Length: 403
Image 1 (cartoon, helix red, strand yellow):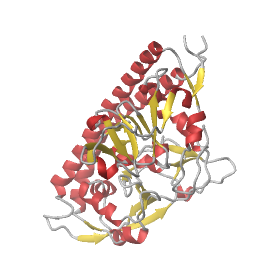
Image 2 (cartoon, rainbow, N blue to C red):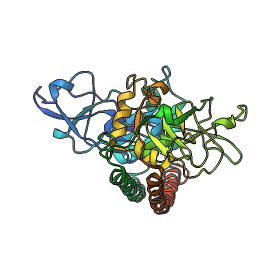
Image 3 (cartoon, rainbow, N blue to C red):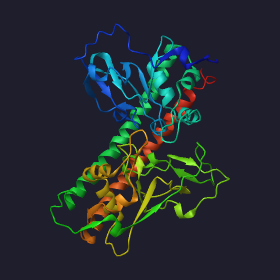
């Protein structure tokens, strides 16, 4: 049975306005959701803020419970920032103007819209619609309104939404297990070396420029698709999200471009993003292994300890991933949220770090390696869950495959 397809604007209101009879007074408390409050991985609003209505009545996007938020600006859109709105104070929320708001009508469930725009294939297609200049490219409203969406009966939608929700929960459990391992690494680092700001053990202090060599990549024009056998990929910035290297998050180098082997990522590399959103700028990631030919873009640095520096890459990774150093990284960044924050190489070279005895760093690395072997098992489970989500989404929104 073939299911009808309708334009998105036929099944939902796109960016609806606050009704005139909203009943809100200036001192009424409402929910406030900045872009940073939406987690791109889980698809949830993870930070719930409040503001008086009088402070947000102008210059912000308005939404309510059961609406769907979809980030329209780069790189948030590509990273998958979208969420179903729930538990807004008084039912209303206000937030970033870089959200598209989708309000389901009677033909579709809000969750049906949410899973539709969360698909990686949808986001890859939406990139082609971008308007604007570099760093401020957005998915236009007209594109969202015209995109076609399959519309099966509501009972079918509920069944398929339930299956995709279960798959996302499974992936979430795997991510939580991996996150617990990351917490153990950070706790172990603090226990063995002390807080990076206080340096209670009075370890020697060096700047990154004194102990590291910096290597940058290059960002050629790429194709927005997974690479095939024998092709080279180019990392996205989000491949370092959470301080864990994920090379599946990449673009593909077209055949007309010649790869530069100097920018190839290798096992044992320590990478750091120099340009990104506030929560991701300065994110480090250690490369445990690679699964193909992958290149660094120019927005990522490779940090290589010099032979006489007495630095183990895993110690440095743990240090740079600590809360103290992440805060210091953000302070080094310049720019605006719209243009993405940037850490210059000069500022990064001037960042001071503590350098404990190498033997102690090596013991830390051994513990981290043992923890990593456990995390690999959870990562394999997460990869399987992700494949399941992609497969379910592919079947769910294929109008020719409804049975």
